[in-house]
Image (tube, rainbow, N blue to C red; front, side, top):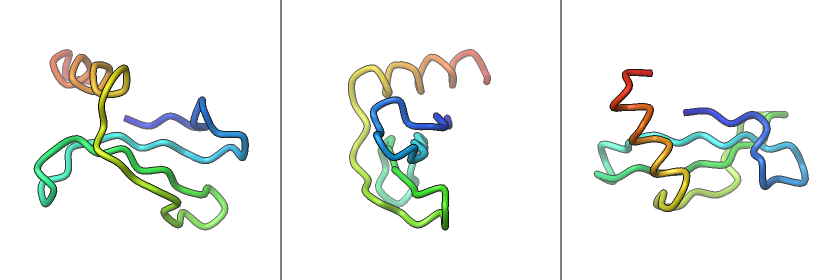
Length: 60
């Protein structure tokens, strides 16, 4: 799932949410759209996790 721009970002970063096979959980990654470098990442929870799981079940 992609949120462009990240709704909580003041600098228009991009939020990417998806399952990480190596971490074995859903992860949120914030990237800088200027050069697509990673800014930060964390284990997804809350509304972002619910949205990801609902989209996965819906097949989108």
